[in-house]
Amino acid sequence: MPDQEEMWQAEGSKELAVIKDWLSRQPHLPHDVEEVLLRRFVVSCGFNLDRAKKTIDLFFTIRSNAPELFLKRDPCAPEIRRVFEITDMIPLPNKTKENYKVFIYRLNNPDLDLFNFVDSVKTFFMLADTRLTEDEDIPAGEVPIFDAANVSLKFIGKLNLSVLRKYMLYTQEAIPIRLKQVHVINAPAYIGKIFAICKPFLKTEVSKLIKFHLPDSESLYSDVPRALLPAEYGGQAGPVAAIKSHWVKRMEARRSWFLENDQRWKVTEKLRSSAHNDARAEKLKDVPGSFRALALD
Image: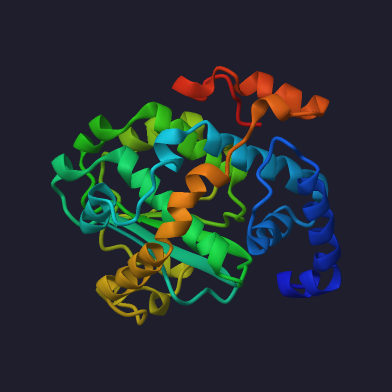
């Protein structure tokens, strides 16, 4: 089987040209979109152009209907810097032998009074945008690792269900990645109570990707080699602080892009032209409070 790069060399340029032409003829969608991001849509959708077009449409539609997550995104703002002070959201520098990109997400401070769920999701998406629009390398898949060591039952009270629903929809249906595995490490006995809140928003195929690992367990290493992990986890990727500093600096260097993006990546619903887009607009018209009207299809 050819790998992603071989497929891209064989047909990617042709597919990308088709997507660019299609996007230029969609009056309701933004046209100022980075080429590497469009390439990610083509690859993540298995070079299926119809699927890529639908995913691009949903990507921008969700963003336009979630201003609390995608507007006023200043990487130098106090609330964003506070998120990075109490959480570690780090794409790791090396990939697995399958060419999967690995991430670690964790609370580094157990004081949940300092934690703001909406700000954390906003920051998470800012970090994702930085990588998706800057990194030319497109991995064959994504492997998030959630470290639950500092997650207590109090975390449930910090959740915003409307934002959680949008987060789940966006990450499962719209963002141009291929999720291959999901790991929850240092899982406490009560992790099932927290998972029960998320489960209604999870697609069946995504639920099947999730593996829970008990504290002090080494079962993670059967999927993710220990060497790929940060020093704090016994790996060779360097300290968490150094990896995080690298990504914070990259985000802050794109401050102008984030502030301009408030106006650039908007969907103009009244300009939707096709029957498909009209149907999607109808499903999304009552979205402001939540995504209850939009099923995970």
